[in-house]
Length: 375
Image (tube, rainbow, N blue to C red; front, side, top):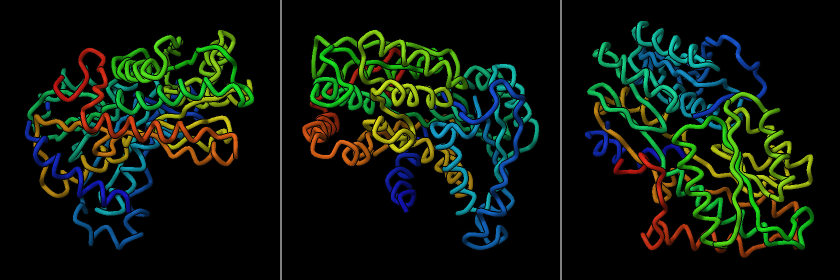
């Protein structure tokens, strides 16, 4: 399985780099609901490969707190996939706490702190301030945070070079907007980007996206909008349609549960989108050029693995780049099938070239202030 490959590649990085540390939400769920849901994963998942009693993590309890809902087909679902695989492999008990407001996030986090879990995983950077304030008060609890870095003797942090993945997405978008022989692509040199909440990690996404686009075409215009929420597909659709009205013909989704509205807007307008976090190419087939995959599932899995296998080391961080396959683009196969002979193969070739140049260091992708391996 791919996770096994990941464990081999990245466990070493965690064992070494985890000696030094230190968002998204759901479509198909009601916005603003009070969320405390228990994952029914442990017994079922463990039964796939034997009973929980036979597993190395039997008796271990892990709580994951989400700044949004599961069912987003994006960031949160990716995190949950990693948890479910860890439950299957190790027999750990998983509990999910979902929330759509800052009040719920903090309440869920404190509840997890108090309930005696072996590991509390904060799924996104929305929990950073709560961890800084409270983790030291729970020295016997192990914590992990994904998508940012928080220092603490009982904290590990796993973040990503989303700027690198977004560089590739921006380059692909800039090339695609030049293909005026494809239906829905206009002559304007304009592309778009719609984010969920206005937080630093999303600015890191945008920094890379804009740099990648301008690497292809320095004169291109890149529109930017924030929905201010992870949980409002209608808002995402509204902002996307507005960008199409301003001349964009392809918009990148970086909005978790708000994102399905972005993809739907592209389909409705006869335009195009780029997915995020998970492979969203089939969510609106023929309207999604590619997806910028971010391996949140891997981060969640590795955090759980470190507790089960006794390799957890506090005050440490890991940073997953293109080189470690922590970020990257999907293979364009869905769009290839949709466009047939009209599919621009030069985009695929260029993306491979840019990947190689980023890995070699020939291209250095800029970070938003405060992000990157040396932040």
